[in-house]
Length: 238
Image 1 (cartoon, one colour):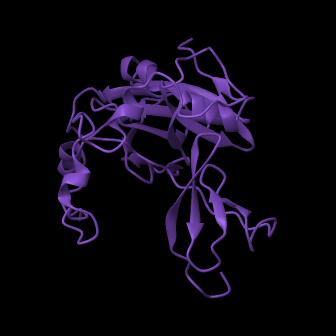
Image 2: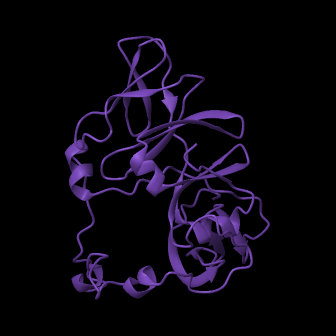
């Protein structure tokens, strides 16, 4: 901003059960779903951060596909390593919250279509919000769908890692199934042409079509996603 790179921290504040970040330059609070400053000097400034895709996966699967990855050591010098216990450990941070069936605080925009703590892949395409329950994605590795006038495909691998891409009017089926953990995932379109699933895009294999870009996404609890996107389209498996 004005040539200065802002760094962010967690404010400790929640809005609709979603964490507000703050920038260390102006101390403004930022909504992380929208990428906009909502309180402070930058509020109503019109600034909006680019939303990037997110991936929730196992370290072993990520490292298998991306062997040159670097990772933050849990010996940070700020918090003891015991702070970073696995989420399944009762001593881990937020363990009790994750086990609680409800949200930490009440919200007025709620939906009973899913359990409040059901996890969804959330997309916002051309102003139209959509949510894809991870439980359904695990059983349906390739979903061809449309949202906000954009044709898209959601691909889920064996570790429940879900990625969404534009599909440019193509209809895809798996060649090397996303259920084959660790294998390169290949798709085939209606013409029999093959596509490779990369982090940034679907890449044509052996033909001259344009790559199809990956779509920005969130992984969220249903109660949190719906509180911000009450008009969201919920994928129900059909």
